Amino acid sequence: MDAQKYIISQLDALKVPFAVDINPKNDAEMVYAILKFLFSKKFRKFSIPEKNQAIIIAAVEKNVVNKEPIQIVFPFGGYKLWRLEETPEADWAELFSIIYFVRWLKPVCALYPKGVNFTFWLDEVVITKLNNIPQSDLDEYRKSFESLLAFIEPWAPSNMRFETFLERSQYESDEAFEAGLQAEMEKLAQARVKDPKPLSESALRAIEMNVKLTPKQAEDPDWQKKVDLMHYAYYNLQEQQSRIRPSYTTENITAFTVFFEPNVIPIGSTKTSVAKFWVGVGALQKRGDSFIEAILSPSQIEKANFVWKPITMEGLEGKNFKRIRVFN
Image 1: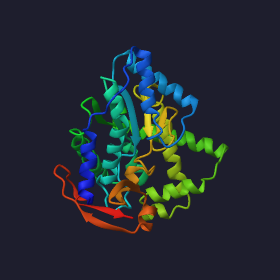
Image 2 (image 1 turned 135 degrees about the vertical axis):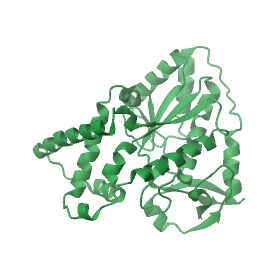
Image 3 (image 1 turned 90 degrees about the vertical axis):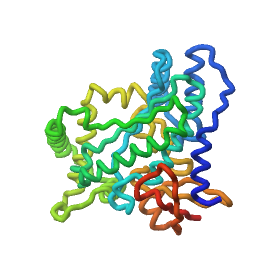
């Protein structure tokens, strides 16, 4: 089997109906059955603490009682890491993750008629200021990402809905966001003067990986600290958005590659990966006569001994879907 036939086979497998062998007799039994699928060890990467479980259980109970879809949010930056040659568009990493999410939620959709609403929450409003990524690149990424969601729709269950939500829509204007962010940065800076905490090595690595450093910025010995300050000031500003924010953190379910919010189900990004799809690239790992999807971080790309294989798939547009990395 070659790479293209493998990818097509994985898409076709999504259309195969999932056989549900249980028939919940009431809402309580339905909630219990849904939770078994959501917490499946086949997909999640870590055990879920009881405090997380309590929020998730309450969210599913609310959805079932109200006869509405199970609401799941996946928050991410809404960009492609500038260091990757794939930037600024989405690539196989995004597609493989979306396929993985469909596999995870397919049993829920087969069991529960109302299905699932899966919202990708894009934090791109701060990325230009934080990482020096042009807005035009962010726009290109969003366009290519939403094209993938449209592409996957024919293979996904009919009661599974993917959508995007922009963090910037929570603010009256870009100016209002800027003012709010500046105010939070000033408050956080004052707090850090009283209680300074040095950046960890992992935090420094993440900052230096994500920020497209400008020459002027590089002259500032405290530039990493200032980026970190903006990063956490942004989180603080988000927490104040009472109109929508609670549904993201405490009322619905958050899916993510690792623990993040108190209602997180840590499901990774593919069967074998926890690398975030927007800061990695999609590749196929050779397994006998077949393959397995993987998402490679920049450091993994450097170490991987891969070859490029050509791909031609109808409906997959963009510069990143003409070929794919294959490694042993």
